[in-house]
Length: 166
Image (cartoon, rainbow, N blue to C red; front, side):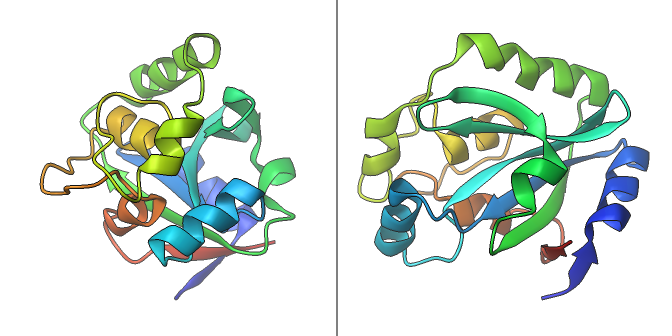
């Protein structure tokens, strides 16, 4: 897997208005470990990387917090494994950012949906990381007969994801 330095990634995202940038992590939380074990994949959490107000931000759906926005450098620097990829988007960048930021106050995390997604189809508009990211980024998963895994989202990226290094 190719690697990318944080400062190079930040500049790429700042100047790229045709793609939606997604990150995936191997979360060390109890839920993250459970998801990795159940899905047999390396990635257990996904979210968006967006650039606004002269800063790179993480926008993600988190258990216990719902949708949140935090500085990317603070959020990702202590993760043991971070993948970063991009997908083509038809939305104007500012409309996409407005769309995901609207969820900060309106959408709560669905813990039950997250735990059931490896076993049953939970594509019912539930709000947990992979379902939320795929819905907001308009990624189609119509052929799956189960919930959407974080690794499914990362596999939809245009090219093999980078591994982020600080």
